[in-house]
Amino acid sequence: MTKLEEIRAAEARLLLSTYDRSPVLFVGGEGVHLIDEQGNRYLDLLSGIGVNALGYNHPAIVDAINRQSRALIHTSNLYYHEGQAELALRLTERTGLDRVFFANSGAEAWEGALKLARAYAGLRRSEGKTVGTKFLALEQGFHGRTFGAVSTTHKEKYRAPFAPVVPGVEFVRLNDTADLRARFSSEVCAILVEAIQGEGGVRPLTQEFLAEARALASSTGALLIADEIQAGMGRTGKWCAYQHYGILPDVTTFAKPLAGGLPLGAVLCSEEVARAIHPGMHGSTFGGGPLACAVAIAVIGAIEKEGLLANATAVGGYFQEQLRALGRRHACITEVRGKGLMVAAELDSAELAKRAAAEMFKRRILINCTSETVLRFLPPYILERAHVDAAISALDEIFTEYAAAQAGAASAGGQHHA
Ligand SMILES: *Cc1c(COP(=O)(O)O)cnc(C)c1O
Image 1 (cartoon, helix red, strand yellow):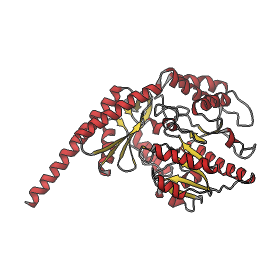
Image 2 (tube, rainbow, N blue to C red):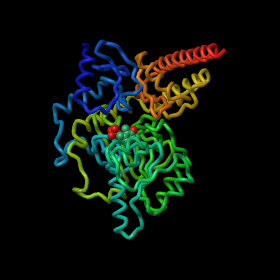
Image 3 (cartoon, rainbow, N blue to C red):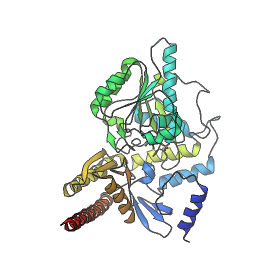
Image 4 (cartoon, rainbow, N blue to C red):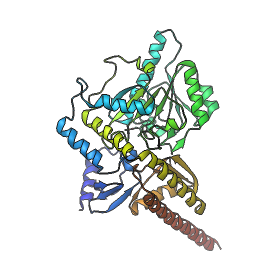
């Protein structure tokens, strides 16, 4: 039995069967490459689902971990440490929001945002305003797996097995401004969006839709909450995807790339909304620990020092151009979407999408297939054009072989009937 087979068998016996893992055992990484136990290198265009912004073994992260782990790893939130205010300053300066709460993951940050919206609505009611408790979320939206987060996540299969989920959530058709207006009322305490939906297939909101959401929320004092867990922290070429729209939400959430691979989440809000929170109302044992904060500060430093926002814009733009060119040679690509290094190619067949991701894996290039027909690319921000070229030529080969196989099957079928 190989090491991989041993681990597979042990996991099959010992773990809850939540994941359908690819058959590979990674033991290391360098730059944009992962390395398996036999020393094979994989070009990673997924970066641990948008987490490893600086790739693997980046000196800024390794140094921060070394330094901080020798000093202090955990204190709890009963005491001060050096990292939280320093990181919060960097985040507030880059987002346009005023205050921060630190959590450990995306879903947990999102829970914080939902609780903040309910608490703020309660505060407004106590001040004599009319504002309800309902959330408007978007179709195809994804916000995580905890109860509040799944309740605001659209896909039925994520919610149904755990019913009843948190009540008071209604879903609005994506980019349908009329549907948004029809469902909005003073009953609503918050409109929940991803400026660019991730899991839902890399789908950007239209300018009109996000502007309408902002205007409706402002008209009653409801909150506009932007989930930037996947798109935020520089992936799209700006710190926040909403900055491409020139629209400021009242609350936003970060997680995936925030600490470059360590678990860390953050909820940010305006000074006005922060009025709703008092000591004891919300908290976390691990959230914003010294180690995760030190690494997040180092990640932000490296993104700026190495010009990675500009790199995400340039290489991401090149990626989309190359995918569009590929689409002119292969009719199976029906649309190319994205911003910066959050990129997707929509295919005309779910079977092909699944197969293409599997074929890329065989060629040691990691991508994934989301929303059935969408090939998604969330590479590290250090990606170079040559890596894009490698991915495009592999896809070219895969689509060519698939088309040939389809044509072969069709003509064999034809002969059979003749
Ligand atoms: C991944 C993701 C989450 C959930 O984050 P976890 O860390 O997996 O809990 C929430 N919102 C968005 C937009 C995400 O992409």
